[in-house]
Amino acid sequence: MKNYYQKEIETASREEILAIQNEKIVKQVRYVYDNVAYYRNLMDEKGVKPEDIHGVDDIKKLPFLSKEDLRIAYPYGLLGTDLKNCVRIQSTSGTTGRRVVAFYTQKDIDMWEECCARAIVAAGGTNEDVVQVCYGYGLFTGGPGLNGGSHKVGCLTLPMSSGNTDRQIQFMMDLNATILCCTPSYAAFIGESLAERGYKPEDNKLKAGIFGAEPWTEEMRRSIEKSLGIKAYDIYGLTETSGPGVAFECEEQTGMHINEDHFYAEIIDPKTGEVLPDGSKGELVFTSLDKEGFPLLRYRTKDICILSRKKCSCGRTHVKMTKPMGRSDDMMIIRGVNVFPSQIEAVLLKEGYTPNYQIVVDRANNTDTFDVYVEFSPEQFSDRIADIQAREKDLNAAMRSMLGIGPKIHLVPPKSIARSEGKAVRVIDKRKLHDNV
Ligand code: DLL
Image 1: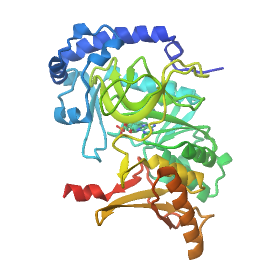
Image 2: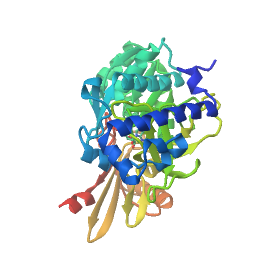
Image 3: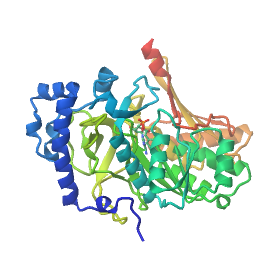
Image 4: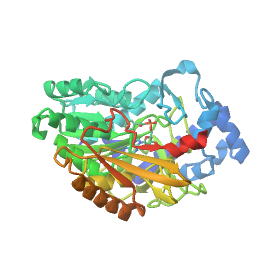
C-alpha cells in the first residue's frame, strides 16, 4: 500500500495541477503588486501589470528577484503583509555575508509543515515512527520545518537540534528512533560514531533518513545507507521559499518531487535569463503561489539542476528536480577549469575513501594552487611513506581524469578533519581573501 500525506493533491493529474497553479498565480501576483512596493516597482519598470497575468504561462513576463534584491530590501522591503499578521521569522546563517530574513504568517507555517509532512510520509513515516530531528533549531529552517512536519504526521518527535553526538546516540538507541533527519555530512558522522562505539548497522531501529540542506552525491548516499542500515532520502528547500520540503524524494530515489501546488518551478539559462524546456540543465527559479508573509515571485535560487516530468512509480505526479549539481556560486574556477566539490566527493567515495575531506584553493606566483586533504579510514591507515605516496598518486590520477586537472592530494590520519554538525564546510578558497584586501 502506497502512502501519501495529501494523496489527492500529490497524485493529481497534470491538468488538475495546472488548474490550481493558474488560479493561484493570478491572485498571488495581484496580492504582491498591491502589498510589496519593491516588487511593484520592478513590475512597473518592466511594464507588466497584474492584469497581464492570466496563468502560469505568463509568469515569464514577470521580473526576476535575486539575492541582491533581498539584500537591498532587507529587512522589511519584501514583506507581503502587516507585521502584526506574521508569527515567525527564520533566517539563513549569513556565512556568505548575505543574511536572508523570511517572515511567516500562521498559514505560511501550516503550508510549510505540510510540505515537510509529505516528505516524511514519502520516506515511510507514520504515527508509529519516532523521528529524531538533528537539524539545527532556531533561526535555521531545518529543525523547525521537520519538527512541524513530524508533528503533523503524528510521529513521536525528538527535537534534538544539532551537535552533542553522544546524546544523539543515547536517545537514538534508548528511544528507538526510526527516522533520522539531519544534514548528510552529520548523518555520515553519526554512522561513524556508532561504529566507533561498537554498534553494527542492525543494532539501531532506524529505517530511513531525510537528509538535505547541502549537496551530497549518490556515493555518499550509499555510504550513509550502509553505515546506518537505512534508506536515505533527499530533501531540498531554502529559507527564501519557506525552508525544507519545497521538494522531497520518494521511494524511487531518482530526484525530488517539487510541491507544485505551492511552488512553481522554472529552469533558466543563468547567463541570459531565458526559460529553458524541461530536461535542460540550468538555474532553478521559484515562484511561491500562496505565501503571505514573504511572497517571492521568480526568485533565482542559483541552484543548478534539471526538471523531469517522467512518470514516477510512486504515483506522485509533481515534477521532479535532480539533486542540485552545485550552486552557480559554488563552482570554483581553478586554472581556468570549472570544478564542483561534488565531483571531488564522488571520486573519493568511488576510490574507497571516507567523505571527510577539505578542498583548499589559493594563489601563489599568479597561479592557482589546488589541494585536497583526505582522511584515511582507520582500515586504510598506514604510516609507511611509500604507501601514502602511492595512494596519493593514484588519487591524483583519478581526480585528473574526472576534473581535467589534478589537485595535490594530502592523505591525513583518521579524525584529523573537523566533523560538521550542520552544513559541512568543504571548500576554503583563500583567493577570495586576497581579492577582498
Ligand atoms: O538549507 C533548508 C533545508 C533545511 C533544506 C533542511 C533541507 C533540509 P538555506 O540555509 O536557506 O535552507 O540554504 C538553501 O541550501 O539554495 C541549496 O543550495 C542548498 N540545499 C538545500 N537542500 C539541498 C539538497 C536550507 N537537498 C540552500 N541538496 C539551497 C543540495 C541543498 N543542496
